[in-house]
Amino acid sequence: MGCTDRIMNLNELLKIEESSTIEFKELVNDSVFKSLSAFSNTNGGLLYIGISDRKEVLGFDCSNRSIEEMTNRIVNKLGIHPQIDCIEVNGKHVLKVEVKKSTPPISYEGRYYKRVGNTTREMQGEELRTFFTKGNNWDGLTGDYSLEEIDAETVRKFVRMAVTSGRLRKTDEEDDIKTTLEKLKLIIDGKLTNGAIMLFGKQPQNRFINAVVRVGKFKDEVTIIGDRYIEGNLFKQVEEALESIKNFINVRYEITGEKLTRENIWDYPLEAIRESLLNSVIHRDYFRYNVQTQIKVFDDKIWFFNIGGLPEGITLKQLKTPHPSVARNPIIVHVFYLAGLIEEYGSGIGRILKSTNEAGIPEPEFKEEFGGFSVYLRKDSFSEEELRKIGLNDRQVRAVMYVKEKGRITNKEYRGMFDITDRMALIDLSEICAKNIFERIGKTGRNIEYILSRNKPEKPEINPK
Image 1 (cartoon, rainbow, N blue to C red):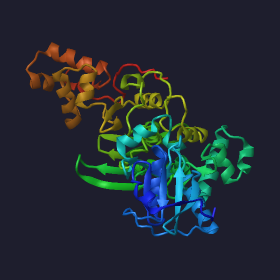
Image 2: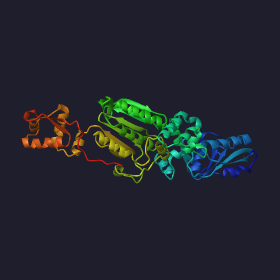
Image 3: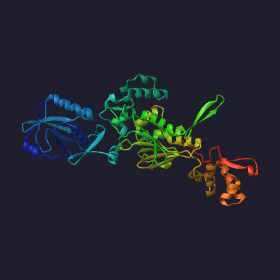
Image 4: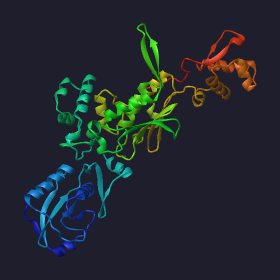
């Protein structure tokens, strides 16, 4: 390849204009690889190296060694195989690099480019999503990554978890790191995928800066009293985010059983927290790299938010019924499934609903908002909103708020608050008791008082799958 392929005279060169398929470069730098990525993602193109954009012929070293080095750099950085020729223009050598349109998207250092006229532009936001949703998943796309970026201990820990869960064989522990990643389809055609870096990378944020989890403790919507910025691979993010949330909520202890075993009673069932957290990291839209996964812990609720809405074809209403699993990141989902952390059958929402129902806290709220998906866990079964949902009238709601503040209420106090008859007060208070919100203490007459029930309130039956 070191010899001249053909001779182009200067007049012939002057007729060539930069366009969506042609570009001139003075020397080899990052812009060369960005342009080749753009050509590959658009309609293919020709790159002339050694010519300025003013058509000045500066020349290029066309020795065999130089051309071989250039070829290897393109293959290693972009994963494409160019056609490289050396031409002579005005007595100087120029390198001509031709690439064809690629079926899989081609990235350079984790970014994707396209040609618009005679310019190379990075694709971002919704444009990038549209480009990739033509049959490609973010976690299956390859990049210019090295095995040195993989944390071997995280891979080995995952394999042990998968063997324990019964989803990998004991013999799989004997595989080396590369073989394990190949079996998981995290290496494709010899190149590591985005999923490999995100799942097992030593520091994925070197490639995907906002692929982090932010956990904050809030006094109100604007006052932050605690903040955790959690980096690392997804296994590390889930582990550390769960511990951060537990540090921001309350726990009480109960001694149960004949052996006096201590049981931890959290504000929220840990299964609901865990499933909401897993949902937020494995189903987020990683193409939208300018938004972090966010978790806000308030005194009365936890808000989980991940960028990216529900998969097409699934509504918020259908989430609460048996529904198929439609994975935005199928490789990430499969790896977490093998590790025994999730199921692959769309059952996570059902487990959130079941665990919150059993704990006697309000049913979680699911929303599509801010370009993403939110889960709201609330811990107060006696909030005004929840009380109205289960059928209490205005008087009854005010009575519950009174007892929450004062600790108890009598029939006489209830009558005085609303100027109603003894019979109407008795009916109202009896209905509140029937719904397991109040319980009556005392035996007769003036000794009878009403306090908040120690049992969970009556609520509609939930039978998630």
